[in-house]
Image 1 (spheres, rainbow, N blue to C red):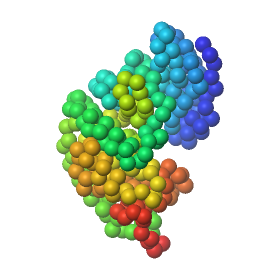
Image 2 (image 1 turned 45 degrees about the vertical axis):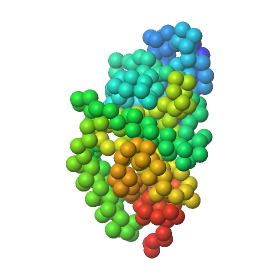
Image 3 (image 1 turned 90 degrees about the vertical axis):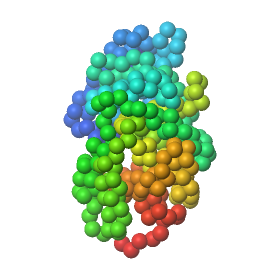
Image 4 (image 1 turned 120 degrees about the horizontal axis):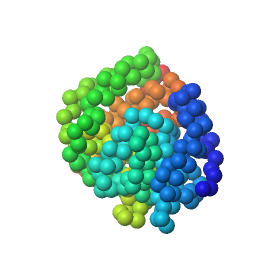
Length: 296
Protein backbone atom coordinates (compact mmCIF):
# COMPACT_ATOMS: atom_id res chain seq x y z
CA UNK A 1 0.00 0.00 0.00
CA UNK A 2 1.28 3.46 -0.90
CA UNK A 3 1.98 5.55 2.17
CA UNK A 4 0.53 9.03 2.59
CA UNK A 5 1.11 12.05 4.77
CA UNK A 6 -1.75 13.53 6.76
CA UNK A 7 -2.62 16.80 4.96
CA UNK A 8 -1.52 19.81 7.04
CA UNK A 9 -4.89 21.52 6.51
CA UNK A 10 -6.72 18.55 8.01
CA UNK A 11 -4.36 18.46 10.97
CA UNK A 12 -4.91 22.15 11.71
CA UNK A 13 -8.70 21.88 11.42
CA UNK A 14 -8.97 18.76 13.59
CA UNK A 15 -6.70 20.17 16.32
CA UNK A 16 -8.71 23.40 16.37
CA UNK A 17 -12.06 21.64 16.58
CA UNK A 18 -11.30 18.55 18.66
CA UNK A 19 -8.30 19.42 20.84
CA UNK A 20 -6.38 16.58 22.45
CA UNK A 21 -8.84 13.96 21.18
CA UNK A 22 -8.23 15.21 17.67
CA UNK A 23 -4.47 15.04 18.16
CA UNK A 24 -4.74 11.40 19.24
CA UNK A 25 -6.92 10.60 16.22
CA UNK A 26 -4.43 12.23 13.85
CA UNK A 27 -1.67 9.98 15.21
CA UNK A 28 -3.83 6.92 14.54
CA UNK A 29 -5.13 8.06 11.15
CA UNK A 30 -2.53 6.30 8.92
CA UNK A 31 -3.18 3.01 10.72
CA UNK A 32 -6.96 3.49 10.52
CA UNK A 33 -6.73 4.08 6.76
CA UNK A 34 -4.42 1.09 6.32
CA UNK A 35 -6.78 -1.16 8.26
CA UNK A 36 -9.76 -0.05 6.15
CA UNK A 37 -7.80 -0.66 2.93
CA UNK A 38 -6.86 -4.15 4.12
CA UNK A 39 -10.43 -4.92 5.18
CA UNK A 40 -11.92 -3.97 1.82
CA UNK A 41 -9.06 -5.02 -0.46
CA UNK A 42 -8.15 -1.51 -1.59
CA UNK A 43 -4.95 0.19 -2.61
CA UNK A 44 -4.33 3.93 -2.47
CA UNK A 45 -4.42 5.41 -5.97
CA UNK A 46 -3.85 9.12 -5.50
CA UNK A 47 -3.07 12.04 -3.23
CA UNK A 48 -5.24 12.48 -0.13
CA UNK A 49 -8.04 15.03 0.04
CA UNK A 50 -9.74 16.31 3.17
CA UNK A 51 -12.47 18.39 4.73
CA UNK A 52 -12.64 19.78 8.26
CA UNK A 53 -12.74 16.43 10.07
CA UNK A 54 -12.25 13.71 7.45
CA UNK A 55 -9.58 12.28 5.19
CA UNK A 56 -10.54 11.10 1.71
CA UNK A 57 -8.21 8.77 -0.21
CA UNK A 58 -8.67 7.83 -3.86
CA UNK A 59 -8.43 4.02 -3.91
CA UNK A 60 -8.90 1.11 -6.27
CA UNK A 61 -10.64 -2.14 -5.43
CA UNK A 62 -10.67 -4.96 -7.94
CA UNK A 63 -9.76 -2.56 -10.72
CA UNK A 64 -12.65 -0.23 -9.85
CA UNK A 65 -12.18 3.37 -8.71
CA UNK A 66 -13.50 4.21 -5.24
CA UNK A 67 -12.87 6.65 -2.40
CA UNK A 68 -12.07 5.86 1.22
CA UNK A 69 -13.37 8.40 3.73
CA UNK A 70 -12.08 8.19 7.31
CA UNK A 71 -13.70 10.65 9.70
CA UNK A 72 -13.00 11.75 13.25
CA UNK A 73 -15.46 9.66 15.32
CA UNK A 74 -18.60 11.72 15.88
CA UNK A 75 -22.37 11.05 15.89
CA UNK A 76 -22.50 12.73 12.48
CA UNK A 77 -20.60 9.73 11.03
CA UNK A 78 -23.52 7.43 11.80
CA UNK A 79 -25.99 9.99 10.40
CA UNK A 80 -24.06 10.27 7.15
CA UNK A 81 -23.83 6.50 6.73
CA UNK A 82 -27.54 6.06 7.48
CA UNK A 83 -28.48 8.77 4.97
CA UNK A 84 -26.29 7.25 2.25
CA UNK A 85 -27.82 3.84 2.88
CA UNK A 86 -31.30 5.34 2.70
CA UNK A 87 -30.74 7.18 -0.59
CA UNK A 88 -28.91 4.20 -2.12
CA UNK A 89 -27.18 6.33 -4.74
CA UNK A 90 -30.22 8.35 -5.85
CA UNK A 91 -28.75 11.83 -6.26
CA UNK A 92 -25.89 11.08 -3.86
CA UNK A 93 -22.60 9.22 -3.94
CA UNK A 94 -23.14 5.47 -3.52
CA UNK A 95 -22.01 3.77 -0.30
CA UNK A 96 -20.04 0.60 -1.08
CA UNK A 97 -19.02 -0.46 2.44
CA UNK A 98 -19.04 0.92 5.96
CA UNK A 99 -17.04 0.11 9.10
CA UNK A 100 -18.68 -1.13 12.26
CA UNK A 101 -18.12 2.21 14.02
CA UNK A 102 -19.43 4.07 10.90
CA UNK A 103 -16.31 6.28 10.85
CA UNK A 104 -14.84 4.70 7.68
CA UNK A 105 -16.81 4.68 4.44
CA UNK A 106 -15.94 3.18 1.09
CA UNK A 107 -17.64 5.31 -1.54
CA UNK A 108 -18.21 5.54 -5.25
CA UNK A 109 -15.52 7.86 -6.61
CA UNK A 110 -16.78 11.12 -8.10
CA UNK A 111 -15.27 14.43 -9.12
CA UNK A 112 -12.91 16.13 -8.92
CA UNK A 113 -14.97 18.88 -10.62
CA UNK A 114 -17.61 20.46 -8.37
CA UNK A 115 -20.48 22.86 -8.93
CA UNK A 116 -17.99 25.61 -8.14
CA UNK A 117 -16.87 25.24 -11.78
CA UNK A 118 -20.37 26.09 -13.08
CA UNK A 119 -21.96 29.53 -13.52
CA UNK A 120 -23.68 30.51 -10.26
CA UNK A 121 -27.20 30.68 -11.66
CA UNK A 122 -26.99 27.24 -13.26
CA UNK A 123 -25.22 25.73 -10.25
CA UNK A 124 -27.90 27.10 -7.92
CA UNK A 125 -30.61 25.46 -9.99
CA UNK A 126 -28.74 22.12 -10.08
CA UNK A 127 -28.35 22.24 -6.31
CA UNK A 128 -32.05 22.99 -5.95
CA UNK A 129 -32.98 20.04 -8.15
CA UNK A 130 -30.80 17.78 -6.00
CA UNK A 131 -32.50 19.15 -2.87
CA UNK A 132 -35.87 18.27 -4.39
CA UNK A 133 -34.71 14.74 -5.21
CA UNK A 134 -33.38 14.23 -1.69
CA UNK A 135 -36.73 15.23 -0.16
CA UNK A 136 -37.89 11.63 0.20
CA UNK A 137 -39.68 10.25 3.28
CA UNK A 138 -37.23 10.06 6.16
CA UNK A 139 -36.72 6.75 7.96
CA UNK A 140 -37.67 6.40 11.61
CA UNK A 141 -35.05 7.75 13.97
CA UNK A 142 -33.71 10.42 11.62
CA UNK A 143 -32.73 13.52 13.54
CA UNK A 144 -35.12 16.39 12.82
CA UNK A 145 -34.22 19.94 11.90
CA UNK A 146 -36.72 20.98 14.58
CA UNK A 147 -34.60 19.31 17.26
CA UNK A 148 -31.67 21.58 16.39
CA UNK A 149 -33.63 24.78 17.01
CA UNK A 150 -32.94 24.85 20.76
CA UNK A 151 -29.15 24.59 20.45
CA UNK A 152 -29.23 27.02 17.52
CA UNK A 153 -31.13 29.62 19.55
CA UNK A 154 -28.76 29.13 22.50
CA UNK A 155 -25.80 29.72 20.19
CA UNK A 156 -27.43 32.87 18.84
CA UNK A 157 -28.06 34.26 22.33
CA UNK A 158 -24.45 33.56 23.30
CA UNK A 159 -23.10 35.36 20.24
CA UNK A 160 -25.52 38.29 19.98
CA UNK A 161 -23.45 40.95 21.73
CA UNK A 162 -24.90 44.49 21.55
CA UNK A 163 -23.71 46.55 18.60
CA UNK A 164 -22.65 43.75 16.28
CA UNK A 165 -25.94 43.72 14.36
CA UNK A 166 -29.16 45.73 14.53
CA UNK A 167 -31.59 44.28 17.06
CA UNK A 168 -34.32 44.01 14.44
CA UNK A 169 -32.19 41.63 12.35
CA UNK A 170 -31.33 39.42 15.32
CA UNK A 171 -35.02 39.35 16.26
CA UNK A 172 -35.89 38.20 12.73
CA UNK A 173 -33.46 35.32 13.16
CA UNK A 174 -35.02 34.39 16.51
CA UNK A 175 -38.46 34.29 14.89
CA UNK A 176 -37.29 31.94 12.14
CA UNK A 177 -35.60 29.60 14.60
CA UNK A 178 -38.82 29.47 16.63
CA UNK A 179 -40.72 28.66 13.43
CA UNK A 180 -38.34 25.81 12.58
CA UNK A 181 -38.76 24.40 16.09
CA UNK A 182 -42.30 23.50 14.95
CA UNK A 183 -41.23 22.15 11.54
CA UNK A 184 -43.05 18.88 10.88
CA UNK A 185 -41.63 18.15 7.43
CA UNK A 186 -41.46 14.37 6.97
CA UNK A 187 -38.82 14.34 4.23
CA UNK A 188 -35.04 14.35 4.17
CA UNK A 189 -32.65 17.21 3.52
CA UNK A 190 -28.90 17.27 2.92
CA UNK A 191 -28.28 19.90 5.67
CA UNK A 192 -24.87 20.95 4.28
CA UNK A 193 -25.64 21.41 0.60
CA UNK A 194 -23.23 23.74 -1.17
CA UNK A 195 -21.39 23.84 -4.49
CA UNK A 196 -18.32 22.11 -3.07
CA UNK A 197 -20.47 19.19 -1.91
CA UNK A 198 -21.88 18.48 -5.39
CA UNK A 199 -19.43 16.69 -7.67
CA UNK A 200 -19.36 15.74 -11.33
CA UNK A 201 -19.99 12.02 -11.79
CA UNK A 202 -20.34 9.38 -14.47
CA UNK A 203 -23.43 7.53 -13.22
CA UNK A 204 -25.32 10.82 -13.04
CA UNK A 205 -24.20 14.29 -14.13
CA UNK A 206 -23.94 15.51 -10.51
CA UNK A 207 -23.99 13.73 -7.15
CA UNK A 208 -24.03 15.11 -3.61
CA UNK A 209 -21.47 14.13 -0.97
CA UNK A 210 -20.95 14.80 2.75
CA UNK A 211 -24.58 14.49 3.78
CA UNK A 212 -25.68 15.27 7.30
CA UNK A 213 -29.08 13.83 6.48
CA UNK A 214 -31.72 15.44 8.70
CA UNK A 215 -35.50 15.38 8.44
CA UNK A 216 -36.89 18.81 7.66
CA UNK A 217 -37.56 21.47 5.08
CA UNK A 218 -35.06 21.74 2.24
CA UNK A 219 -35.46 25.53 2.49
CA UNK A 220 -32.81 25.27 5.24
CA UNK A 221 -30.19 24.39 2.59
CA UNK A 222 -30.75 27.62 0.63
CA UNK A 223 -28.19 29.43 2.80
CA UNK A 224 -25.18 27.24 2.07
CA UNK A 225 -26.09 27.14 -1.61
CA UNK A 226 -26.10 30.93 -2.07
CA UNK A 227 -23.76 32.15 0.69
CA UNK A 228 -20.52 31.24 -1.10
CA UNK A 229 -21.26 33.45 -4.10
CA UNK A 230 -19.91 36.97 -4.63
CA UNK A 231 -21.54 40.06 -3.05
CA UNK A 232 -22.25 41.51 -6.49
CA UNK A 233 -24.76 38.72 -7.27
CA UNK A 234 -28.50 39.26 -6.98
CA UNK A 235 -28.90 37.04 -3.94
CA UNK A 236 -32.68 37.32 -3.86
CA UNK A 237 -32.84 35.99 -7.40
CA UNK A 238 -30.52 33.09 -6.52
CA UNK A 239 -32.68 32.20 -3.51
CA UNK A 240 -35.76 32.21 -5.71
CA UNK A 241 -33.99 30.09 -8.33
CA UNK A 242 -32.98 27.53 -5.69
CA UNK A 243 -36.47 27.54 -4.16
CA UNK A 244 -38.23 26.97 -7.46
CA UNK A 245 -35.95 24.05 -8.32
CA UNK A 246 -36.20 22.58 -4.81
CA UNK A 247 -39.96 23.18 -4.72
CA UNK A 248 -39.86 25.01 -1.40
CA UNK A 249 -41.42 28.32 -0.32
CA UNK A 250 -39.08 31.15 -1.45
CA UNK A 251 -40.14 33.23 1.54
CA UNK A 252 -39.14 30.49 3.97
CA UNK A 253 -35.87 30.00 2.10
CA UNK A 254 -35.13 33.73 2.37
CA UNK A 255 -35.85 33.69 6.11
CA UNK A 256 -33.61 30.63 6.58
CA UNK A 257 -30.84 32.46 4.72
CA UNK A 258 -31.31 35.53 6.90
CA UNK A 259 -31.22 33.61 10.20
CA UNK A 260 -28.30 31.42 9.24
CA UNK A 261 -26.40 34.47 7.97
CA UNK A 262 -26.95 36.20 11.33
CA UNK A 263 -25.44 33.25 13.18
CA UNK A 264 -22.57 32.89 10.71
CA UNK A 265 -21.78 36.61 10.84
CA UNK A 266 -21.76 36.71 14.64
CA UNK A 267 -19.64 33.56 14.82
CA UNK A 268 -17.07 35.01 12.44
CA UNK A 269 -17.00 38.27 14.39
CA UNK A 270 -16.26 36.35 17.59
CA UNK A 271 -13.66 33.86 16.33
CA UNK A 272 -12.14 35.83 13.47
CA UNK A 273 -12.78 33.19 10.79
CA UNK A 274 -13.60 33.88 7.16
CA UNK A 275 -15.83 31.00 6.12
CA UNK A 276 -18.18 33.37 4.30
CA UNK A 277 -17.69 36.73 2.63
CA UNK A 278 -18.72 39.42 5.11
CA UNK A 279 -20.59 41.47 2.50
CA UNK A 280 -22.56 38.42 1.35
CA UNK A 281 -23.61 37.72 4.94
CA UNK A 282 -24.66 41.34 5.46
CA UNK A 283 -26.66 41.25 2.24
CA UNK A 284 -28.47 38.09 3.33
CA UNK A 285 -29.10 39.54 6.78
CA UNK A 286 -30.59 42.78 5.47
CA UNK A 287 -32.28 41.27 2.42
CA UNK A 288 -30.48 43.62 0.06
CA UNK A 289 -27.98 43.19 -2.79
CA UNK A 290 -25.49 44.76 -2.22
CA UNK A 291 -25.70 45.13 1.59
CA UNK A 292 -26.89 48.41 3.03
CA UNK A 293 -24.51 50.10 5.48
CA UNK A 294 -25.34 49.99 9.17
CA UNK A 295 -24.07 52.30 11.89
CA UNK A 296 -21.57 50.56 14.14
